[in-house]
Length: 295
Ligand SMILES: [Mg+2]
Image 1 (tube, rainbow, N blue to C red):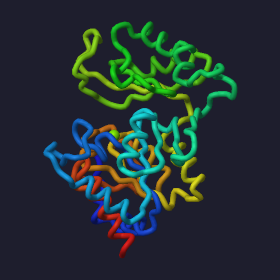
Image 2: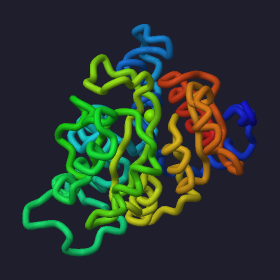
Image 3: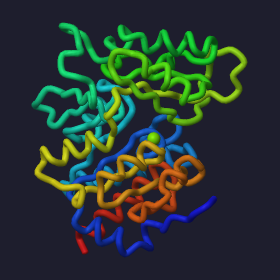
């Protein structure tokens, strides 16, 4: 490992930032949720209340937490509702729910006004532009939809396979609207129909110019807040990018094992790490926030 991040509990900068933090943006998978996507387990997968107790404490203190995830609107909305949170950012920053009483909004980055047909979702438009077709033609047998997570999406496509992203991007750049491909790391799908693929990656297709970071900036502006009053916690390279929209970024311990995440933190001096993994790391963050605000 090329560099070592300071731990949350030994960073004076973290304590100072948390003492004025009004809002926390949180990733779900691998961060708030443990193995298998459960919030009711500890870092090694045993049943535990550590994370939910911390959530209750944060809610009781009246601190705002916003889920910021690659998951779809239905999943992000249901998780947020169950945890008692009113806003969320879904599909990697392309869908924002500012408040439960308002309709959701799509953020489409560089897509020109009027590019969607009547009643068409951006997700459907991507298919119409030929995004899936050019990728399966360029990489036969090497890429497919990430069944069953590809359903109920409204903006972004989620795929799995093993492809060269530069070549894929060049193929996508021939299409009608600007679409970017993001490699979100290695996954272990229980089944797939890929041919001669040992290491399976998950890929997202997103409108160019969209990101968790851009969505967070939009949400903060709506709240009358600045990134200076926000903290973000996550476990992936795309989460490191969302930390640009917050005064403090926190990586849960399990993130440090991923060299791509560590590479993404290069040159970033506002990111700290928890000592515990996944939901236990999230609880560690929550307790630090509560202590800093009370102190
Ligand atoms: Mg994650």
